[in-house]
Length: 110
Image 1 (cartoon, rainbow, N blue to C red):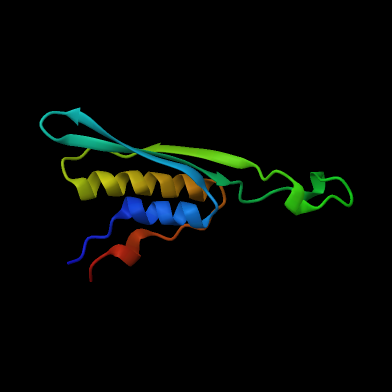
Image 2: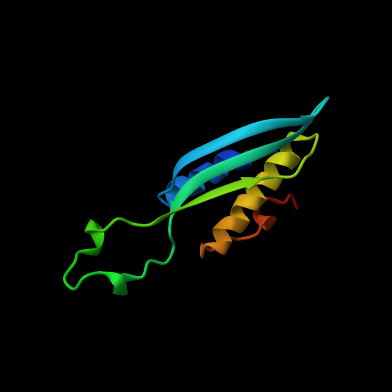
């Protein structure tokens, strides 16, 4: 079975959305090896209200609003578990900001 690096996958998704400032921080919660992952990044706001623009203003010349997303996954002793929990939390934030987010069934082994 091949392991998919979900954090790398999420970073590729964020890059594809035009996102920036992708930061991952691993935190040791309790000895010996209970950890959790913090992930933060910024992505463009999904739906921009173009009606607020001045008549004749070029939409590409306007600043695109950015939303900051920060999520912390749950605690676990296994890398694939705490990695997945953090990525799922980030995907939930993206969904809440209007991005289409599929579930993880694509990654499940059949």
